[in-house]
Image 1 (spheres, rainbow, N blue to C red):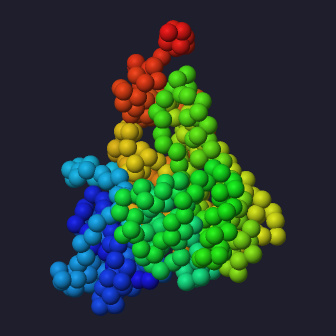
Image 2 (image 1 turned 30 degrees about the vertical axis):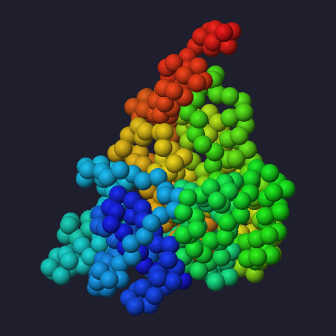
Image 3 (image 1 turned 180 degrees about the vertical axis):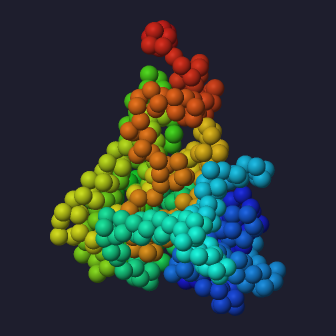
Length: 456
């Protein structure tokens, strides 16, 4: 169902989300502004749901004016249950990131349409075809156009045609949907009238404000338990229908401990939650998608740390590396089977997100590796699902270059890691109390020191 949202936050556009589905519907009907996808202004105070057919790259000024024209009487003030980790208000300098500069360039100097406008402007001035300025402008515009076509062709050849998506027929399952990114995605789909099932280990009564969430069905489930997953899958099919979209958002908390002091139980828990649980959910829900009329989509939330393997994150990095490998293996198996193209596989590899999972981690470089707001990540994921696309989403911008990092000489890699501060961030993120609890008095500990502590 269509809806529009308005919040007062500039730092986290979805800090306050409406829990009144009927109110959202009535507001949309009065405004006549179609909306199905979250899109924030980034610099203003409006968060808007715009029609997915227009894409998230469209300019939203017209929609902002339409919402403003409604007047203050139609603006909804709401509260957010189990709030997503919120970034504190930042100074304007902290909003200047590499991603922002790249986004501006992509919409100006690197945009094919604007490049051709420059060519037409030169012709409007009667610039000769043989003039150097006209030839350079034409060559530049042609180069950008070829790149855009190559990107589109690469997506089509690598992942095939998009599958048809009818939101009225889709059933979305979100694991780890009681908080963080999973909660945001579940609420957005719930407010749009899609059948949504959230699987989380928490009891529903323990989730603060969950009664205010509308359009979402909650199923308490330990997804590391295969029998529990199968049992809940049968319930969901009976109550909502056959699941066609699976979004694996569940993740274990970050321990921020060196290998020498990380308890084996903590390592095992992370692997079971981040990797084994995904194996269970994919194996249980995939058969139903293969038999569904319009196929399905599987979204796995991984991390760039699966490639970078930061110090102090051995369990988390290992689990995410395994998750990415599992995803690609399943994608390859579907590709060589008779089910090729029926189920779309979407892998999401992100940097640090502003959710409770990363609350103890301080980003090592705010300019090149900014902390992602959940709404931005959710926006990309929902767009891909709605358009029926598979593929790879990497955020922020530096994550796109991860594959190139692997081909660098080892010495250059070491220098890059030192300059980025990635190996210090996680260890410094754990509190002194946590390090003391595990026998770590500093971010470095020798095996001899560990033996002494164990002997005591």
